[in-house]
Image 1 (tube, rainbow, N blue to C red):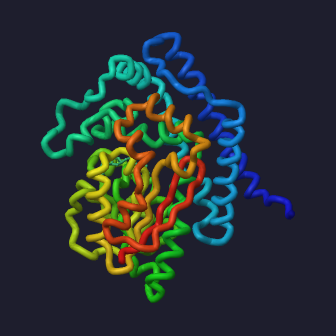
Image 2 (cartoon, helix red, strand yellow; image 1 turned 135 degrees about the horizontal axis):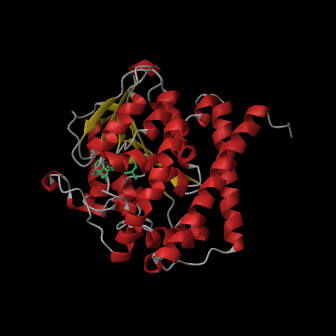
Image 3 (tube, rainbow, N blue to C red; image 1 turned 45 degrees about the vertical axis):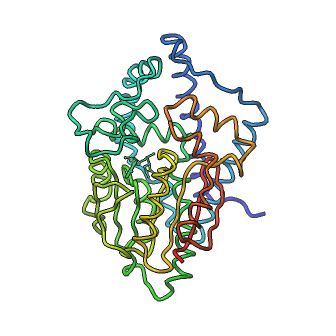
Amino acid sequence: MSEPSLAKIAYQTLQQGKGLLGIAHKEISTKLMGFLVPEAIPDTSHITKELLLDLRKSIKDLEEIDWYDAERGLYPKNLLFEAPWIEWFLKYPLVWLDMPSTWSRRKDRNIQDLPHSINKEIYPDYYLQNFHHQTDGYLSDYSASIYDIQVEILFNGTADAMRRRVIAPLKTEINKYFPESNDSSLKILDLATGTGRTLQQIRSAFPTSELTGLDLSASYLKQASKYLNNGENELVQLIKGNAERVPILDQSFQAITCVFLFHELPGKARDNVIKECYRLLQPNGVLILADSIQLSDSPEFSSVLENFHRIFHEPYYKNYIKDDIDLRLSMNGFKCINSDSFFMTKVWSAIKA
Ligand SMILES: C[S@@+](CC[C@H](N)C(=O)[O-])C[C@H]1O[C@@H](n2cnc3c(N)ncnc32)[C@H](O)[C@@H]1O
């Protein structure tokens, strides 16, 4: 076996550092919550030593594949080190300052603590909640400004590595079904794009393609625009809208991605989004979905999945982890359905029949 290069060691060290920070943050904040608001402590399943070892191995495997995909040129290696580090560093104290209000919502089971200024009529009911007990739900600039750091902490620094797992199937299927296309003729849509972290990864892999992101949150789109449309690269189009009814013409895209949305939707809405993807894709268009792993293919992590919806307000997660997404895809006209899991993320690829 060959020695790892310096760059690989740097990547592994960065990931380890992020992992340790994530663990330390969660340990300290949980202790503080137990001390200050013991009623907010959720009833969770015990995580055994064996399970911890399995989780660690699964993170290592994720890092290996992330490095391997960069090494074989699917995306540039510098993407593995990229993040708005200074901004995250400066915003990190806000995450701590935000905690007491999160604990109080958790204690009071208050899940509809949203800004008074929003027009509730323009959003679906399922959306008007404090997912993860987060302040303002998805509906304020403040929430958008700390979301990425919260996700990094939650996943011990692996969030982008998991998002990047959409790139290999995206490239493989596009090369297979659109062999004549070059990068600049490709149109790719990212549904529920949030603050744009997934689009940022995709743009590094498809630098000249026409990219569009859609989300229901104007605040999250503003944050995405700040990161993505900074004048250095091709303009990314960002649209405020519901992924169940996208305001774009039929067959507009060769590929669609959708990352970490499905676990936050009721079953019917998941179906509606899949139908929209079918409508928006050209024949043989490529759909890549990524979301939480599910019980059927990761039974060894069942207590982690169980704890996730006990700790965070995730009203549709319990249903999602048992949902047959393959069946939903095939019932809605998709073929060649494949899936694979990477740490906490499962990635599906499917082709419009
Ligand atoms: C867990 S976040 C994931 C964001 C992003 N894909 C990422 O990787 O970080 C879920 C996102 O879905 C958006 N969302 C939820 N329901 C939606 C819907 N029906 N249509 C469009 N966006 C939706 C939220 O506003 C939020 O930005």
